[in-house]
Amino acid sequence: MPSSSGAGKGRLGLAACTALVVGNMIGSGVFLLPASLAPYGPMALAGWIVTAIGAIALAIVFGRLARLVPKTGGPYAYTRAGFGEFAGFLIAWGYWIALWAGNAGVAVAFTGYVGHFVPGAASGLPGLAVGLAALWTLTLVNIRGVGTAGLVQVATTVLKLLPLLALVVAGLTVVDTSHFVPFNPSGLDPFAAIAACSALTLWAFLGLESATVPAGDVVNPGRTIPLATVFGTSFAAGLYILVTIVAFGTVPLASLGSSTAPLALVAEHLWGPAGGFLVAAGAIVSTFGTLNGFTLLSGQVPYGAARDGAFPAFLGEASPSGAPVNALIVSSLLSSILIAMNLSRELVEQFTFIILLATLTSLVPYIFCALVELVLYATDPIHYRPPPRLGGLVALATIAFLFSIGAIYGAGAEVVFWGFLLLMSGLPVFVWIKRHNLNARAAAAPRHPTPVSPSFKETH
Image (cartoon, rainbow, N blue to C red; front, side, top):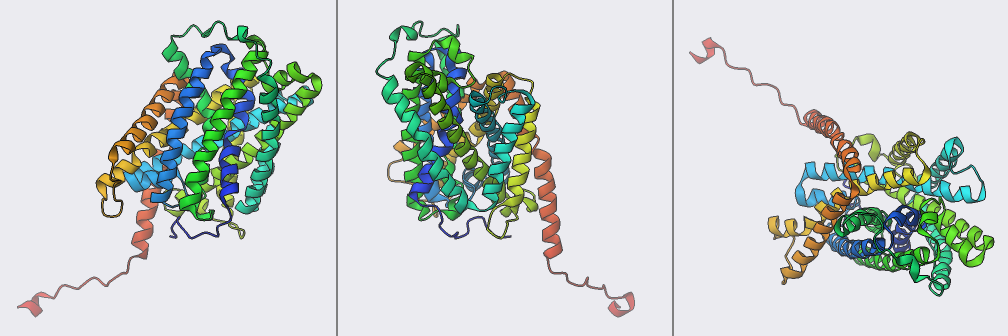
């Protein structure tokens, strides 16, 4: 079976990879999270800062791993190299859940901002139809190939940044500091409030590893992937914090918390109805671009795992253009089911639950990846020579690991419960794959005739 580390055609350069990182992060999170964070008030800013530190540490981790293990599959490929076949499977399974669940969350956010233009389109069956139409349109785009998806990503990333930057520049001059009192209206103790906010805000950083996943299609991946990952994550962190300050400082928290298009509400306060329509249009472009990037990754991860024999073989089949067509279709089907299952919830509640589920299943791969480099140096010092100073590496791994553990704590019992069930549901698949691979190896092994024992007469 071919390796997932093929040479690739190098269709994604630094601009496309940075756009993939920024585009996958700056999307539904920055446009809808102010509503989910409103109950925590200004304490959410502390959550953003903690998450930014953890996300940048993870970005550096992924950048280093991209050099050590230059394979398609991102967190799956790294975990498999460090912890072995079963851990690799579990991380691929969890990361895949995070991607198709994340796609569902982005589609819900897209629906919310469409509702700003078309009243009634953000809920019920019309909302379901809008979300599914966007999801399957971009599934078809990605089936055309990674090059087409990369062009869409660059274009939508540029378009989404313009209204956000305008909102920050105009909003910072009119922030009302009285909105920041009380600092923690949630009623939780500060640690629990920050943990809860970090679990939510981490959603906005999911995708920081995006450039590592299609490594086989990246130009000079050893240099391009680390640069794109760190540049994209640092830029997004700064923008998120500034946008939250503007949102909390211009609109009452109660109004933000009940809005399906909170940044459009902020823009209306700044520029009137025309501003609200402008930002809502930017949010539609933004979430559409994020949905495109997550769709690309939701195909690449099971495709890379299947090519390594860790997922069912049919997910490793590609179209003539090189797109993982079966993986894309199955992922989008699962996203569609999750959207439909949460149809009865209010939009903000639906979005919050889905993003926490996606975040939780992403944190499991992040925990493993935080320690992969140390494992590689400890178990295979010939192929992976440790750096002269291990202190910095240990500190980096510790920050990334503890941050991921803390964010799981903040996700809450219900989300951890469902996330654990989804992760464990992959175990029968692993058993089936192991059995299938064993039978395949047995069938491919050369057969020799069974030697016939000599008769009694011949031996006596």
